[in-house]
Length: 245
Image 1: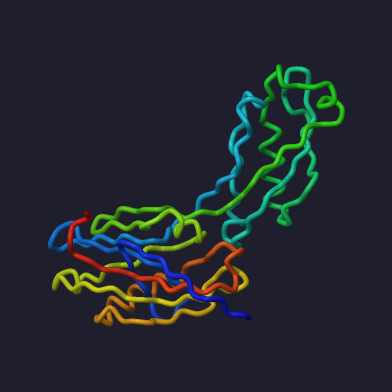
Image 2 (image 1 turned 120 degrees about the vertical axis):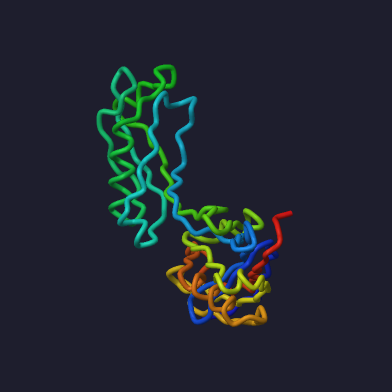
């Protein structure tokens, strides 16, 4: 696999794991002397985000559900559905004009369109006989921030968060929080063909082995969007006990 020049992102909170598959900058801070807050540059949860239909065309357009099976496989893509309309704007029949390549996403898009209703003023005669094509996008996205009982975590920029479909936030080890130990680790990540971290390397230690391990343990579980396959990133992961500024 051809390596590309490593990109660098700056983040407020960072954490990194060793011997896992990916890493991006995190920020970790405590909420009290015994509590830690983690702010990551990466998102950890999955969220489906199909493109919504234009309000000017559709009166009602319930958002399609992102199938659990597709989420678990990391499937993404777009579907073009041809919707055949009744006189009142309701969809009477829906067929797939262009598949996403994943049948579960295709089925989810087609099922959703059957519950849509077009604005009568937008209906053209040909929509009743030839149908109307609608594109539905399915894209997995991680949350930009998270709050836990003992810590908070977030990405320093939305741009870096957009890279990931899955990115669990690192733990801030209790013992290290108790002793108020802080540090910044630099991690180099290589993205594999399926979006997982194909390689993870600790470029610079935070100065604390437990913080390094916590960061790497989390990042190993990360998954990037497949368009980033083959790319390498160097990310700072920061653990801090100071308040968020």
